[in-house]
Length: 192
Image (cartoon, rainbow, N blue to C red; front, side, top):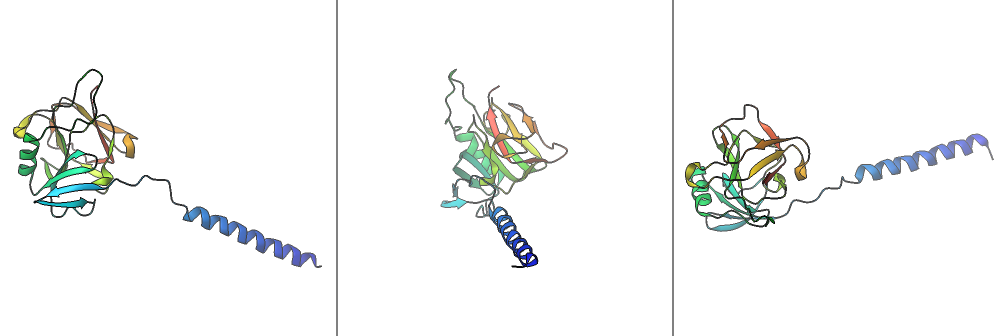
């Protein structure tokens, strides 16, 4: 047998094996947990909220990771959060709880799309509600607009699952404009 043919055949075989392994690795998706389905209550209907479809709503109060009440205006959102008790999923051994809501918007002076959170003690990924990064520009957790102030702090993270760099949002505080939008992938309310 000719050595040139054997070498050529081995080169072709090696190329096929290498290209096959490249295709397999390129086709293998990165491991990522799917966002949980979120039940959305809006204008008397029950929907599945997705990052791309809020069914016409502008602002949503996230009661817990998989349940949101959504509204046409910040006024409706504020009325809802004024009369709705915060989520109490997590019971702390010392007995404290978060007492109110922390709200974030992607517009100045609490405008554009807004999300309110009351569940605390673990990071919540925003990709269940919006397409991250959610550019947080303004926020508040104080007692304005007819609801109780939140005695819990919040951290907004540049990574999913509470990872990456973060920005503190103090308890019972507000910002009409952060100055620079903060690209946010997850949020966690907590007691220091």
